[in-house]
Image (cartoon, rainbow, N blue to C red):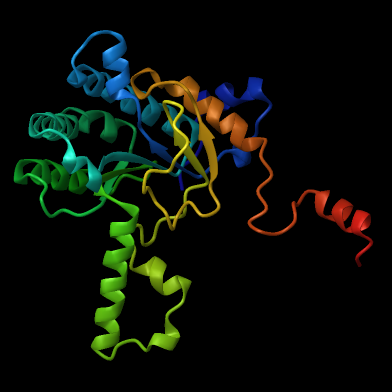
Length: 267
């Protein structure tokens, strides 16, 4: 479990926050690269390239704040519909990120991991991905998870297939299948669910992202386009999160539950 740094404490102090009020796991839908470039009359590639600076900024901020994990929606299964030229550029950008950011990941003690289907990803990308994952495997700081060739429905299909195989092999009876069984067969097995889902660019949809895992996540949408998103924006999202009452289907805690019972007259 990651710990907040002295610099992080100084960052949250003016906001009146305590470390325990921060989310443990933040998932982000990085949206707006194309619009950022279009508004500047630049090619879409310029927006994607600028977006890497945002990844670097929020990784550093997440480490300062002591977040346990940040999961980034890098490439969805639907993104294969994009022009081949753009896909080639995106894979090249991902490959360069994996190479050039290794020093920062090691310096910040970040552990890199990936969720999504490996099938179809270029071998050169998989090589650098596996190399970076192996290099950072022993790091004990924040986890940076890249969702690549990922889709929430695809994940559930793959989990269902794995469970069906266990049933067919006689290793599992249908009556024993529960939520824990499903969670154990998701790409995110062993990870805590996101506490906070951030979407940039103002769009109000989850875009087939972590459909199972965000069931009780707080959602924060900002009009800021991803290439402009920085550590201060992540900090603002954490500030809003800290002000939310998370009920998980029950009554609010911290005294509000007793008040609700008193109003209803129930014992």
